[in-house]
Image 1 (cartoon, rainbow, N blue to C red):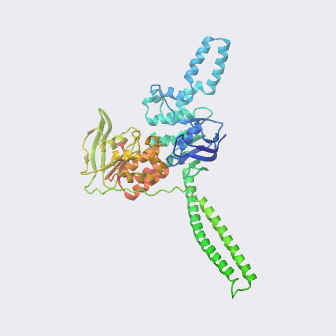
Image 2 (cartoon, rainbow, N blue to C red):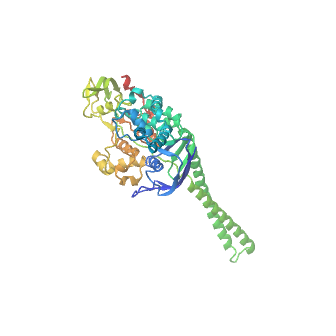
Image 3 (cartoon, rainbow, N blue to C red):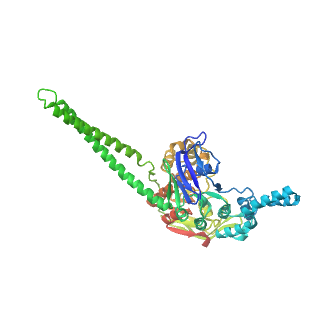
Length: 529
């Protein structure tokens, strides 16, 4: 056990518009399973880069006695086997093995001494049993031994994610920084990874999946509006405490506002009374001046006391609600579809060339339904969404009737095409720029963000651009392909509340179990179609 100590840390990217961290201090125990949460653009990934040493604080310090590793871990050569890739993530075993062979061949006293030192490092890294350890650890994440012999690049994104986690946890004396691992995992993969991480310790996990966080973590770091705080417990515990704190501060704020109004009125009355009494000491009908002066002084003292209480109440009020996360409700225009069923496909097969992506799909969609397409990665969920948008390259066999006059609004899974400024994007997409930016403001975009190129946006901010664009387009049907990837929890809740309020007709793909439970009126599993 050791401590990661952050002391008065400040950081801003060179030439950036805003400071990401300002004089933040906190400490973490390296035995904790720590969840890291906060709204998009608050600096979660930046903080992980600071821990890795890829960026340097512009002020303050970070002190730690552990070695950090970062997930996702890059694999440059996808042609090597999955086992070889996993070995390379843990240590340079192949290089060590070649060097030990060379040293043995030389067979000099100096080379044998160097061989002994290198062999010691090899043994400390479990080099002689590393293949067995990788196979065992990968098996916990349902990666079969057969998959370890395939080229790493042929593994599915979910398999690559799970294998990388297994490999990095086999490294000795490391503390793992896990940055949003669930974005490439289907629901089953998230359950496997969640169960796996729940048995580990010593990591920081950035995730916006509420169920996943609850299953995995025992502490939470939250990047708030004005500070960073650390709490014991999982996400639900943190959310309960945050809500209680917000409610207490809201109630206290209202009480202080009433106190300030009352004290202000009392101070004015006391001051006016004191002035009148003081004036009564002078003139034809003056009272006992000593007595009157004494009373006036007491009233003045009382007035000063009220003023001090006013100032104290105002000062306390200023300390409240600094971290209250306010979010305006989103709005949606979805004209009703009055021409019956929107989609009717009794037996649909979709192919790319000669390769079938979806076979014998039965899809019927009534107005007001919200269908969640479920199934393992690669079963064709995105293919169905793209086919319904009219995307090229997909061949359909069987019948699929779309309702006459049907309009749709689409959120694609990929954000890589987003370039340039928001104004140019709005013009290119035919969006009402004012409405588009108003929605982004409600999704926690600062006005400074409007001046940036989208290349500078975080992954979550890019996804919000696509969601905002979709909400700008009135439609009978909303086709959303993994809309919540990288999106922060508060924004997910905003989107949930929007959908439940306006009840749009939807077909969507999403692996956030909490979102699916709340939103889907029906689940259609493609791998059982």
